Image (cartoon, rainbow, N blue to C red; front, side, top):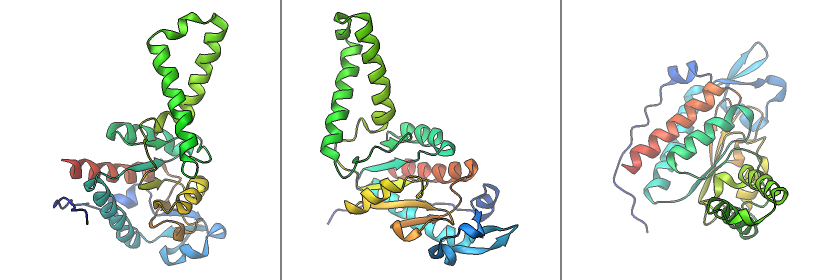
Length: 235
């Protein structure tokens, strides 16, 4: 059995701060997933309000799992492709040197990893050749075409360039939009942490966090807490 570093991290989850960040705002009551009902406090102006006491409980479980992952040097892949999340995901992941997907999820990233890895290696080789001016031997038109290919590959694979194996867990900011990532992770028996808004099935995540996945302030609060725990655990 692997030994976890004996380090307790204080998560400091404050329901008042979560309220200010808008984690409690769900979707319209008509869009509620039945499995989310235990996490709903009530309805305000036709919009479901998430019970933040239950959010705190589930959030702490997710943060505890993150602490365990980091302590064991396991790999966490962050996925957030919606407009509100992509910039925040990229910034947080790069600051912590974590693999991430902030643009379109490429089908097969988990279920057909070896094929994806070959594309990533090809992309990295093209980058190397450009940096070392090996592409200068091509015509201007050919170089322009290769530059376009590099840009396209950067969008698809830029965040997973350092991913040498299938991750041990994925953290998904929108379980509905990135449902393909969820399906692939479940198929490969990869642990899933997911922000569960009122319109999704929280059972699809091993560690669901009942919270708004639309509000930028909500997404930022959640990512900041994850970053805080990761940094403190690594120290």
